Image (tube, rainbow, N blue to C red):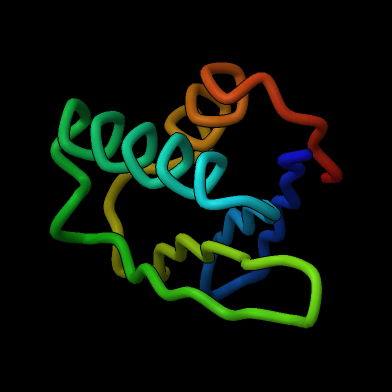
Length: 87
């Protein structure tokens, strides 16, 4: 099951997407890549992965120096993946 969490503070906004299987990972990575490229944000995003014993988390972060709010992009990613999101 894929789920997501959005976090926003003064200096950054972050979307964390957790998944369990290789199939889910492929879906998440391909979706995020396509949407970021579509909005020309692929070069501005700080993306990294972290793992726990039962899941992997893809973290997409934008910092304050971005001149436009990536919230709409995060919404598109969440809707496209059809995931439960914690805000």
